[in-house]
Image 1: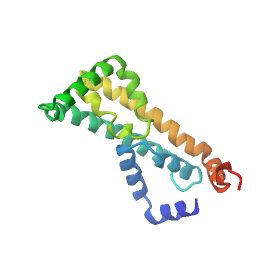
Image 2: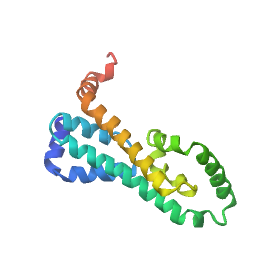
Image 3: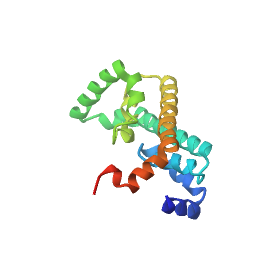
Image 4: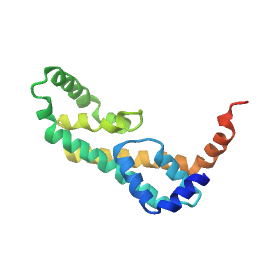
Length: 165
């Protein structure tokens, strides 16, 4: 944690911009570490929560908009891709609500997760409400886990993750 605290001192509020950009693009461990940094007093918990939420929410809004605006043009003339999109649309029409809450968690899905929804007939208002609820839950879980269990995780790392030498 000493290295992280030194990094935080060196870069100050730019850390929040980095956290926002990271959360807009993907869902990984950085918000978890930011939660732990907030628990240790290096970052402000409220700011970490807001930045993590806004990055997660706005990143998916942009991907949804992009697919809604440009998606059909990208599929035209590509029958195999069009077939996959049609299959995806049918699945999302049936399971779209659950999908919005689940695609943030599997590794690699978050980066593209909102794109398929842009191809569907889901209304933007409905998507944005679900997206906000999903981003809020994700923020609470990941930042909260870092805040609550960060020191335990650090101790486990220092102890070789529980493996015996």
